[in-house]
Length: 212
Image (cartoon, rainbow, N blue to C red; front, side):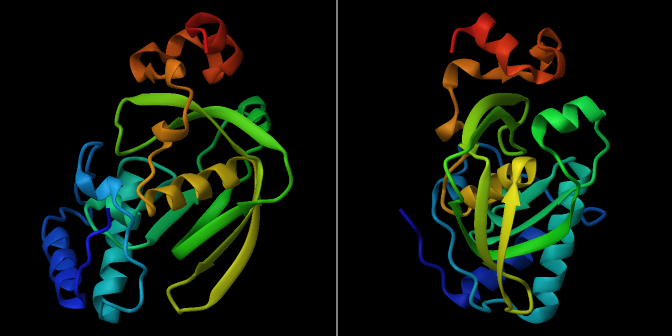
């Protein structure tokens, strides 16, 4: 169930969250916090520009600090359809090829949605900064078309494939109250202390061992 906030309430909430920042980093809420299970409010200009800029900067630094490749506003307790994304981490060539991973330059999405382009799917392990210490296999469309706005209110339509498509879907899902575990093969769930058992997060190895 969605909770309705007035613009004043949202502004006060953002100010409260940002007041917790240390070196531009705020705490990331964990699974069980109700904000992760509620559809976020569409962003319609509820925040003054200076406050929005500060929020985006803190979200970006919090993502880097985690570290992660995306962070949605609900993950820091703010029920707005805003997320930041970036994936410039170095990976071995074989792992990058298996994931269809191409570098993803930093960008922001407001009020996003996505749809599959074709029937191709991909399965791989995903983790979440709000479900710390665990990963599970999620099957997702491998090619998507995303619709979103940027911070200047420009409407953007952009196609993504492979690992980039997975990141966009994962962060967009957060804005509708969905966490990756909702879409995962639950028997594939693994604590990160056990990842050494599956070289390169091999789905085939995990499937044989865990029986999913």
